[in-house]
Length: 253
Image 1 (tube, rainbow, N blue to C red):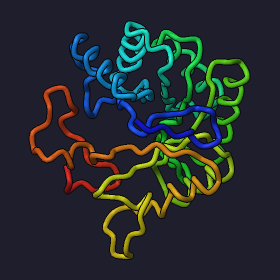
Image 2 (cartoon, rainbow, N blue to C red):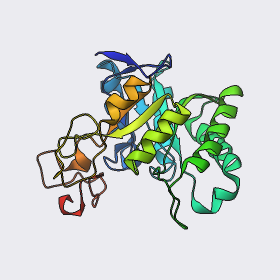
Image 3 (cartoon, rainbow, N blue to C red):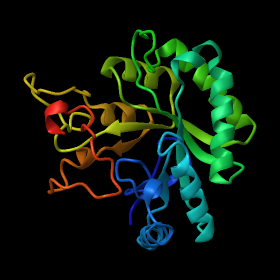
Image 4 (cartoon, helix red, strand yellow):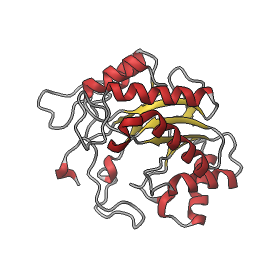
């Protein structure tokens, strides 16, 4: 296994991570022994980064991920989780983020988590009843993240790189997160490779290199386009059954 430092942080993460989300479903709906076997196999292969979130199974993924890693004695494993600010929390974003971090730590069974990301789209202008965040919102999120770093509850923080490309670039350039979740797959490789003007999906305009140039690490997400690139039309019984590949359009469900 190869390892990379995540941006300017001292987190040395495996180039392959373990996704604990609801799309694959294992760490949400799986049997305990199957979760144990899968995580143990990943650890033996050198995987040291596990990516979870409260939204995955309404907290079940965090509970299972933290519990399985403790059961296996994987003290060196790195965990990333996420907070999602919803529209009715915009009046007190900092309190909402702090509360969500505390709740995630409780579910993970830990006093500190390695990195916490936002789980919202980043946009220029917020629309009422839309759970996206603009730069004004993100400033308050970052204030809460920095307070959590100072109190020892999180080590680093990052953003979810979904939303409007220009807004994402402005956000990472302004706030300098340690990491950015970036959509990258062979259906939409635009975060890492140039695409033509006729490209039919969202152009992420080289986000990976953009972040690298300013010292921000990237974590690729949806690398199998929500299952569209697995080579089968049948979804596993544990997997989410109706997921549109991010940034690749409704026709690719």
